[in-house]
Amino acid sequence: HESEIQAAILCSKEIGVQIRVRSGGHDYEGLSYISYLCNTPFIMIDLINIRSIEINLADETAWIQAGATLGELYYKISKASKVHGFPAGVCPSVGVGGHFSGGGFGAMVRKHGIAADQIVDAYLIDVNGKILDRKSMGEEVFWAIRGGSATSFGV
Image (cartoon, rainbow, N blue to C red; front, side, top):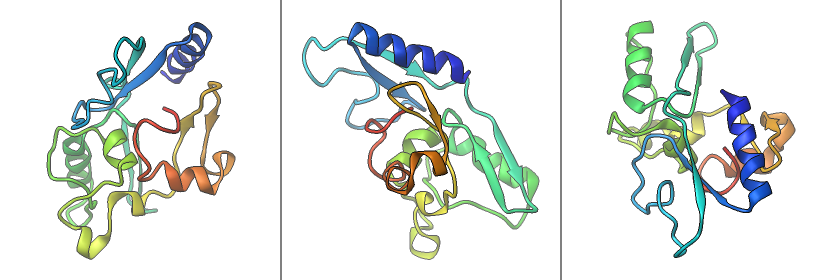
């Protein structure tokens, strides 16, 4: 739940440890599960249980929590519609949180752009534990979380 993430952020800030966030675990650089600086203490926030997907065909939108995988997203879309899709990666076990925050490159990029191009709003928990949406985080941060890296701006 969001309140547990907020508490973890505030606690890590208080005791001076870094945070690693795991969305699906596919991380070629190891930033979500190892300390890239030797002997740097950190805590892990694993989003495995924060994975709901709500499809709204009338608006042609979806709310997707960061712990969901691309496979789960594609499955939900295919169950809701036979004519809708989403341009993202090809590996079904990749977590959407990390994939989207890294831009979301996939096989349909030439026709539909990257996954991040399709994101119209997002929730972000900042370093102070505050939950922000697109309006409250501002357009610069909203732009940055859609390709700027999964480890830079919040959870």
